[in-house]
Amino acid sequence: MSYDGNEKLRRFLYKKIYEYAKEPAGPERLRLLTLGDMQRELDENGIQIPGFSMSKRIREWSQGSSDSTYTITCDELNSECFFCLEFYKNRFAIDRVSFYMRFYDIKSQQRFIDESEISFVYRLIENFKDIAEEYIKLRGEIERGEKLRQLTSNSIETWLALICKNISLPYHIVKMKSRMVFYLLLENGRQLEIYIPYNNFQPVMASLENTINKYLALQNDCAAKVLISNRSNSIRWKNAG
Image (tube, rainbow, N blue to C red; front, side):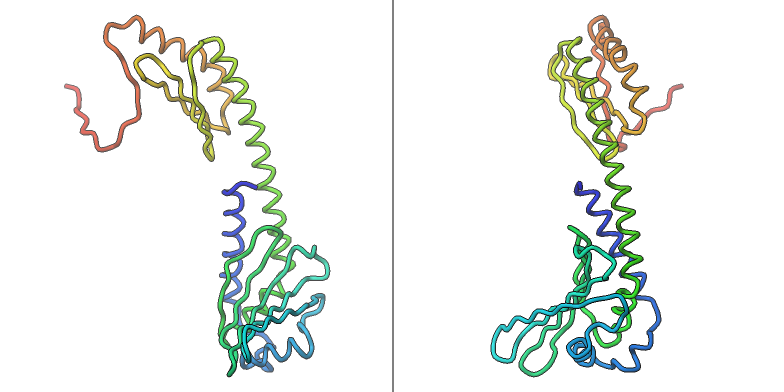
């Protein structure tokens, strides 16, 4: 998965967390008034949501200080998809509580919660399966798009290599998110720069060699040396007439 693909998946998880943060409190708020209540229930009875399992890990940092990590998984999902709650306790009381979700290689941001957000955690866990299904669907779409873009990129590169072999000029390729930029080195350090969009590359490639030859002919035959380039919008243009 590319960096852009991973970022899309992270944004998806962030959106889901924000979405369920607005959900109203459920029946768990009648029995869980504090974060301490929440941890005691996890220790005594596990996660009280059907279809979910829980494991616990404790790390002692010093006398009276520790953190407890509760990993909650949906029985119907792959074990690589899970939800973690982390309780940090000093020698006097619970200091803070955080959570994160992880789907395969992508981890959501770590979010700290207080007593008012206990129900929010339960809404996320209750809807974890639906979130996972949406995530897996989105990941599949991203992977198919990246595979198609790679096939397109390989096709363009092969085509460019053949064109440049006929022209016998040095060239350079820069791959971008939605397009490829083709640079052809001309005389006196000048470069011909051509954008090739992935989603419509065939028309550009079909006429590319002819376009290059026309520009080379213009450069060689015209008394005035012509340079076509991209410039900033700060230029003051003059109207003819």
